[in-house]
Every structure is written in C-alpha cells, then in structure tokens.
Image (tube, rainbow, N blue to C red; front, side):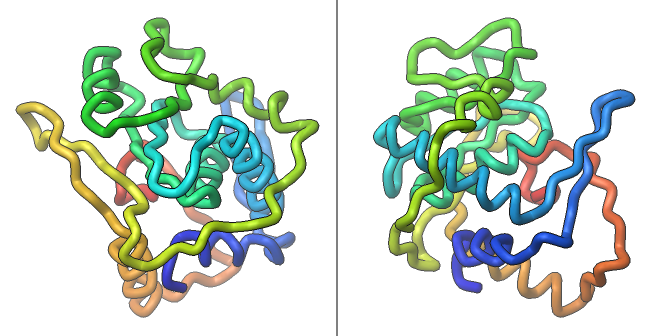
Length: 201
C-alpha cells in the first residue's frame, strides 16, 4: 500500500467487514464494499464538478458514513482533502477555504451559517444525489509523494496554519501501526473523535 487509493481499492472485496453508524436510536450498517461503490459514485459527481488531481476540496461536516465517502471520493479523483473541524465557526471555515484554495466545499445542513463564496454541496444530500450516478471507471495515477491532505491547525491559540500530508505520510503511519497492533476481525472499535483529526482517521 503506497497511497490512500490503494487502501480504497482493498474495500472492493470486503463485503463481510462492516461498520455501524448510530444517530440517537437509529442504526445504519455499511459494508466496506458499499463505501467503495459510493465513493466511486461520488467521484463521478466530483468529476462533473471539474475536480481533478491536485484540486482542493474542503470537508466541513460531522462524523458520518458520508464523511468517509466524501474523503475517499476526493482521493479517487486525485484531489486534496481539506478537513475542517465541525465545531469551527464560519469565519474560521472561510479562512481555511481561502488559504487552501478550495474549489468546492462539502458542508452540513446542521451548520446554520454556510460558506457561499465557492461551489458547495450539502453532505446530507449526497445519498440522493448519487443514486443515479455510475461509479468512475478510471483512477488517476497517484504517487506516494502526492499531497493527500492539507490540514489546518493552530495548536491551542493562534491562526490556522496548513500542514501538508502526502499519501506516504499517512500510509506509513497505517503500516507501522499495523506492525504493532494486528487488527483481527473479532475486534470492535468505537470511534469518538472528529474525523477531521488525523488521529481519528
């Protein structure tokens, strides 16, 4: 595994591995294969939006399966993910989209104030927008040195500063972690942190 696209491709044959998403009393189950197919459908949507290799796409939404689909669809187009912490206010989100040069923002209906100065799609609408789309058939050629994410952080105080993360930065962490903690199918993981944080990803 050299890029996050390689990781996404492993989902194709993972029909038995599942993750569960809970919202209050509702429970939604997805297989990794479903995430793979939905990600490629959304990659078709991004293609229609003229998102290609190297283009920045901001992701400002709470944790959900659609956050994961958005993440991997950007990877499938060779784009650069710009995750924004969901609790961030509009001013900070606007600053990050401007600094990063984002061409598109995926944002949530649960934010009363929306980003309106760039092209936008609402994450809660994705399941309906993708229904009639076909998955992309071709992938970009990605190198380990290509940028995967542009993460803005400010520590505890100060203005956000962009940190460039390549595919190699992230996949190296995954591979090294797996060498020390072998994941077994019987394990159950509880995901609590925002997916905009690298540790949670």
